[in-house]
Length: 162
Image (cartoon, rainbow, N blue to C red; front, side):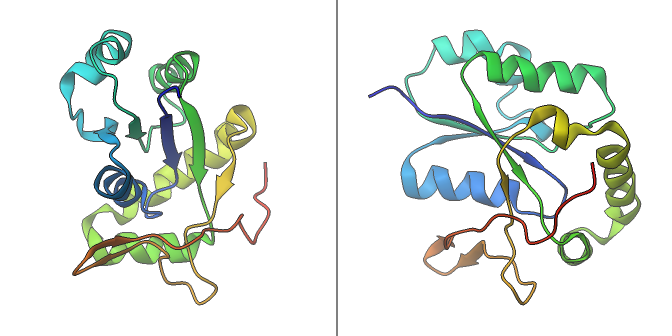
């Protein structure tokens, strides 16, 4: 069986890092958090990094849609065999998650939403979309005393304007 290479991207507040942690803890993936350059070797040279490990890898990255170097990086990971997933859902709920976890990042959330909409990145990438929220607006991804719980996720309930 070939190894699994997964790239989780999407809007802020949708649990990308939490899902990466879940896959690492519960399914043995190596979690690479591209936003904080951890590990640095992956950020510097993903191809060489992949050659040095046989592990399944999940890379999480809330990249900047308007930055050509970030789009180039996403396309580069896909060319190395990563399968992309776009985390998105009812955006007021995503903002609520940001305000709970990192209230100082509210303006960055709005900037990222502006960039997502004006660049058409969702249409460009055509990654499958996953809605990480329950019907009541809670995150479906939860940290518990036993670890991370990730129930089945659904496709987004709202169509996103392109």
